[in-house]
Figure (tube, rainbow, N blue to C red):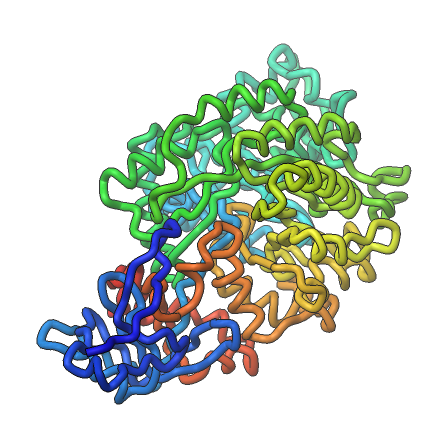
Length: 617
């Protein structure tokens, strides 16, 4: 009896023979194989199966065996794979999609964040910020001296910013540390006391107490307010710090912070963060910075304990600024752990910084930031990490020669221009000796590829450079970015439609903890480009539809990690990573993007490697 076979692609490129036909959507058994119909471990039928294959095909049912998609097709064909041990799930008209991939998430602190820290990203007033801190204090009931932590405030959203004295009223005996979305912090008076600073004792005041340090840049600021103090027995009104610090150098003035967890505790954070992501439908992540191998031991500890139930597809080793090429080479030579053979924990990328951010007015831009007369008093083009292209190419080369992929933080258009030019030079070097080298290099954030003076969009497509974007910024940080770059540039910031139309592979990620880790907020931004604070839609022509949005969170993310052959779509032979949504049609989200705000409660089931890892009660 003849049984037609085809080749299944396994996680690391090995092959295995199968008796299943190679049709991408409807898996039909040939008549001669009827006696050998493989029995599935899991069948889901009676719904909408969104495959995200090359044609964005739809089916009605899917079968899983040994952690892989066995077959996809109509209900009758798929139910033929039912056996006595098969778990059969009637989708009752609901929708199934591939597991979501967050291609840029600084993942380690997430579990601790959702477990015991305050969410400030939704606050639109100082009172709402204070309410969130008060609710955290009530929930934790902390001992005196225990830190209270919050995350993701943005001063652009508020008519006025909170002060340490308001925080003192809520938590007089606890140090409070509230992280800005990026490069900033707000603290209370207890934090100053831990630094040895007392308001009424000038001998404890640091040099920056009454005026900013001379080395402050445009992004740095210490907020101050008039305060009547008793100094040496005399009442005086002075402009003193309110506890709010902006910018990298402003943040550095706060010399105490909540303690970092040890490896064991950090592994628990990873465990809890994984459960949070699974309940949101995320089955794979890419962590874009290990900070000199700090993350790898934590993930390995969690993996050994059996807690890594989603895929950590890549960890970008190191975060490089102006480090010497020799330093980079020495560090990477010291990374000896096996880094490619585990489909649940791998690392192959490196990360370089080219500039700052648009929200802090430190991205490297060709056209000055807007409102510079008001904010800086002189044109502000941001802050490049280095303008020395020879140094940057030598840094890149040190990583490439050791088999690592390049990923560069590029917020401003000048940073993008520099990275593309240097990528081109290095790609030419590599392909002179290895013409078929498969280079998956990316620009991270990649806000401004279509600026008139620096346009790089077509070159990114030509060179195969990936745009690793963070759509949620358009929603969560819209008011900050629009204030800083102006409405015209904001309309072409993160030009989603332009990227796709040009043929650039665009992979979406959250950039948590800067933003919300909820991927559905990213979908909302892709579909609407609406600002959270004002409701203004910046660049409606740069929105995308649900098919492109979903591909950016699935297949494209797999492509970044060299995993598209076995992950990122629901096709026979690929990993059975999938999500069941309480939606009758995936395009309901395109018709009504406001449904994105309900999706946390519409995740019915999350499956990883054929195993149900989350199921809604």
